[in-house]
Image 1 (tube, rainbow, N blue to C red):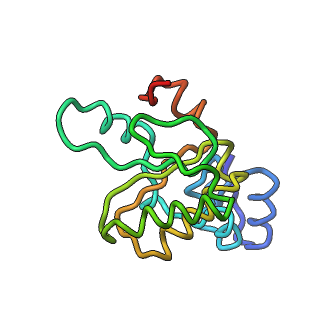
Image 2 (image 1 turned 90 degrees about the vertical axis):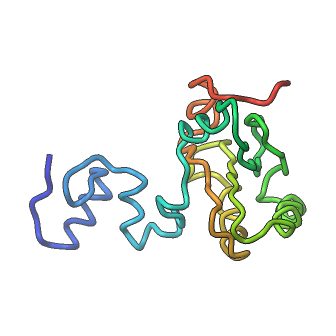
Amino acid sequence: MAMRTSNPFLQIVLVLILGLNPLGKAWSQSSALKFPSLAAQYPWSEKDLIQPSDLATQLNKVLGKKPLIFNIGVVGNIKGAKSFGAASEAANLEAFKKELSSLPKDASFVYYCGCCPFEKCPNIRPAFSLVKSMGFTNAKLLNLTTNLKTDWIAKSYPLAKQ
């Protein structure tokens, strides 16, 4: 079902009611990034994200350096991740900041929460803001749009041994 109107107000209403973008495609996170009113909900862009399958591929390689991974939530650890606890808590965010301060600005690392869907997560926005404010250029937020269980564990991607 495509929207066929040039009225911007009507387009916005249809987007909100029907969950469609102006091209009539199903709503997605990348579509949301194109609407300034939703920028606070999704302050990151596609270039700031890494897909779970891509990280899992890197972790499953027999040879080669494994990426630095930081757990900034209250979920289980992905294989090789260092946990800081919920980044929504000042002490945990400060510990994450201290860890990051020892890295060069071009360091490549991945960070994630996965406690709940991106739009509800209290931990990724403070961590994302911190990473950006510190000037990191190769940091990636793991794109766990639903949660760690659905987007990582259910796909049998590598977890830390318990």
